[in-house]
Length: 107
Image (cartoon, rainbow, N blue to C red; front, side, top):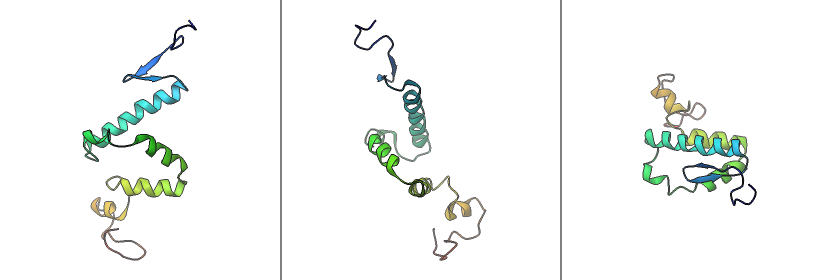
């Protein structure tokens, strides 16, 4: 019924109305929360901090970064996951944790 303020169908997720680009936005809302839950679970930040983070700013900033800068940021924030020198040493794939080019320690 067109007279209903929400239109014929309304989809809500965690009390947030999803009204535009349903499949894309619903996927984003669900997968983003799963990612935040994972970060909290592994101790990336405490659960109470998730409301202090400006997720819209993070999204907007990410959208304007170049591929190279996105790669740098992902490695920088994923010290336990990416194959940087320190992590490769911990995983026993390298003998030293220095930079392979300048040999600076704790790359």
